[in-house]
Every structure is written in C-alpha cells, then in structure tokens.
Image 1 (cartoon, rainbow, N blue to C red):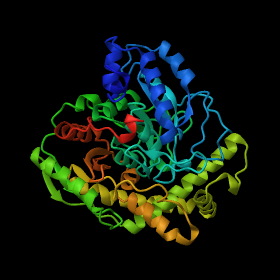
Image 2: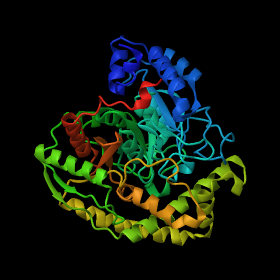
Image 3: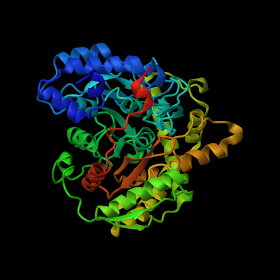
Length: 479
C-alpha cells in the first residue's frame, strides 16, 4: 500500500499494519514527516516540528502497544511535552518557555504507542473559535484554504483532515475540539469533565470548563484513545466512576432505542444557517430510520445569563493564565506581548473580584441544572455543531469600533457548543454532512454527564450508516 493511502487510514488501522509487520513505525513516521513537509507550508498547522525526536522514538517503539508507531501531534496549549517549547499561542510565551517534563496526558499518549511529531497551531490561550494567532499566523482549512479551521484546536484538525497524521491532541473550553472537527470534517469528542487528568500541575482549568482529548477520523479511534488516556490520579478534583467496559467496546454495541431531541436554534436564540439546520435534520431522519425516537425539542436555558457568566469565567481563566505564566517565567506582561482582544480581556480580569468570579459560576451552575433537566426525558440532544458553515479567514478579526459585532459573532458561532463545557457533559461532533460548496458540516450529539458510552454507540451506528472515510479534502492531494 502506498504511503499516501496509508496516511488516510485511521490510527487503529495504521497500528494494525505495524502489529502485522506490514509497515514499521519508522516508515509511518517518515511518511508523516514527508507529508508535513509537503503540505504544511500551505496550511500552517504544525508550528513546532519535532522530527528528530520522533524518528528516534520510532526506532524503540513498543510494538505491543495499542497504537504502536502511529504518528501524532500535540496542540501547543496545555500539553507539556518534555524538552519542547510551549507558547499557548501567545507572543508572551513564544521562545520563553520549554516544558521540563511530560504531563500525565502526554505520558499516556506515549505509553499507548503514539509518536509525537510536533506541536500544532492554536488561538492565543485558546480564547477564540478560530486559529489565526498573530504570533504564528492563520491555519488554513484543507477543504477551502480561504476559510478558517475553527478553533482553538484548528492546527490539529487541519493536520488530521489533510492526512498529515491520523489523530492529534486537542482541548475544549467552549467547543474547541468540536468546532474545528466540524469545520474540517472530523470526529471531535469532548469527554465528561474530569475524564482525562490535568496532572501533575493542575487539578482543573476554569472550574472544569476546559478538558482534554483528540480529534480523529473515526469514532473507534476517539474511543480507543480515550481508553488509553482516561482515569484520575491521586489528588485530582474529579473522580468519575469507572466505565462499565472499555470505550472501544461500545463501538460495536447496539445503542438501543434512544429518545433524541432535535434542535436547530442555538442557545443564543439565533437559528442555524440553512445548511447547518439541514445537516441536523438529515441526521435526525437517519436516527429515525435506525429506530430511534426523535422529536423537535431543546433545553430551556437563560441564554443571556449563560453567555454573560461564561464570559466572566473566561476572563478569570485568562487572568489566572497570565499571572501563572508571569510567576513561572519571571516575565512581566506588557500590552505589546498580546493580541488586542486578549489584553482587553486581561484588563477585565484585573477589574473583576473573586466574588464576581464565584457569582458567575453560581449562575452557570443554575444553567447546568436547567440544561440537565432536559435529559430526564431525552438521552441525546442532536443539533448542528455550529450555527454556520466554515467561515472565511478574518471573520473574527477584532476592531474596537465593531466590538459588539465581534462579540455577537463569537457567541452565535459557539451557541450550540459551550453549554457542554459549563455542565461538564460529553458531546461529540460527527462529519455527517457536506455543503453544496463541498464544505464539511458537523452534527453534534450531547449526552448525559458521564455517559460517553451512549454517545459512542450512537456515533458509531451513524458512522456505519453514513460513512465518511472516503472523503479527502483538495489540499490532501497536493500539486
């Protein structure tokens, strides 16, 4: 099999070739490096190559590990990878910090056999749902390079979509796994709060709003990688019950007859773009054909309170981030080190009291109770992942005189996604629809707290009924 064909196998299939001795880890890694060198200049997905370390790691890959020798990328946000630069997408950190050790998540990626080839682009501190940081430049969507990848895990998503790697690390604080998965035609699962540990340096981030996982091409990869990484360590603030069986085993299990609520109006009150609404309705019809009970129904949440309080918590997150980095590096924050919107939000965080932060969380906890009530009568909330198809690069550019438009655009774009970060519930974006322009349109399934199993069963059933593995973006073929 040609390496360009192997590149578009999922991680499970690539590992199977290694286990069968049909391809070596070094061949897989060398092939991925060649594709990065070929396609990354036009995408700007990988910002820190780690090729020498990857080739050396390939020579000592443990062939009995589940993802033996499979090439992998780390998002340059939160993930600490020993001896490598970390910038969190910001000019404030770029060139100033090298991670002294792997964090627990990265160590677990390695133990599973995944080989880190580099680090990927992200928005500054992951704040914006696009990947266009001033310090590193925009990441371009492989399906249409005039459009963005979504964010903040846009570098990882572009890399997987273009066949540079089969899976890549991502994290999610308001949709940052699911948004770029939707824009790039991938599977993006946001796990339940606390499913993946943030040890050793953190217990949670922003009260548990931010969580860790991956973007993948297949549901089975997302499930199997979660098996490899999930689980608390002593001192973690969240201890979830162990799953009944491995997540990978859920892929082949019948989900039964599920009660599904269909929603096409975001929690902001804005109706989804017709293409996005059509994607959700088509998925709902498919669910009905598969034997599920579907009705038009959505949670009732005070959206103005939700988004106002979420903004206050994210201001607190940014203030903590910059203060923590100031302590760790010894560098004093200066306005010129940051993007204008980041600096503005940082100033807001300095004016915000601890009481303000806790009041915001109290309001979010009320929103969580309101949202959870929906799941007394429904197993799944099915929606578009986004209210719009992938938008053009520059759509989220900030201009002070158009500040309200900027805020509205971010709120409307994430109107289906950020609630799961507030509640801690799992949610997954699936590439079940393509627009008339050939752009991927994601469909989101949100489930009960702690119940990734039901999401994985239904997602796998939908993938089997409407497969997407044959689809390749134009950029992946190259010149």
